[in-house]
Length: 152
Image (cartoon, one colour):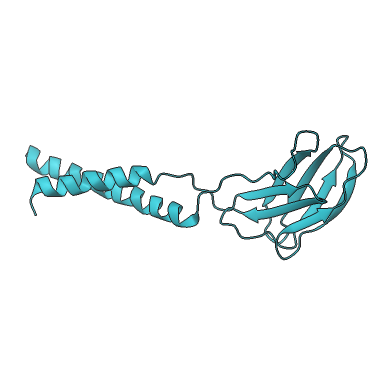
């Protein structure tokens, strides 16, 4: 394999790694909700539910309305209080210190069926992107070594 072929392969690998770029997060916590009775769902970045986490729900004035713990699926349900349109929900994973998530639920702005679900990049995509970064760094190192050899 000659140098031009290696450079071509390297360029293809760089382009592929650029296409796989994503945001990395170790244990990002997500909190989502639905409206039948208010349901809070807490999960980590990879989709793992936050089990047995402390949940505190506050009203708009900061007064504690209700508290409890998430179930095995990372969910916590509570009945909405009549006349209360906004809730501040705090989920604290006590078994994993430092993992805390918060969200505000405003019932006047949330349409039926819309939960606070954000888009999450799948774990396999993040792993492939990580390998792409490593291949890119190795490629730059190889190109630098080749450039240094030819310069002499």
